[in-house]
Image 1 (cartoon, rainbow, N blue to C red):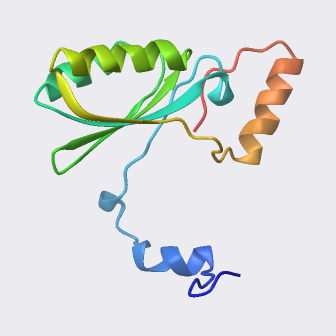
Image 2: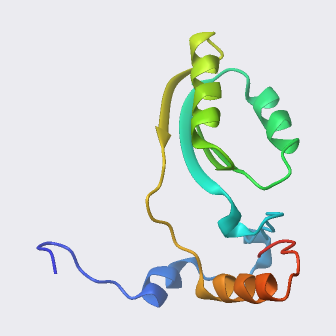
Length: 134
């Protein structure tokens, strides 16, 4: 164990956030036609004045994307087919001035719940399509 780092049980971390009032909760349903593991992940942060156009562009994709705004920075998690092509498109947007302060990260490891992996394996062995995951 590292110095100064305490281990915290997950249920103790969540306990202050638990509430019986469902109005504080939001459901999230993601859609990945080729399955969650069928796409590469890309984390992008940038600043732009064209937030509405960005949202409309993301709605045209055939898969889910995650979009947040923190102060004046857009945080975007994309599920892509090609890292290089997507990064090149973001570089072009930065060069023409539509976005600035671009940062791109390609996660090396990420968490996939075991239940999703098992279900995906079963679907592939039975030649079923994988419609979406919760």
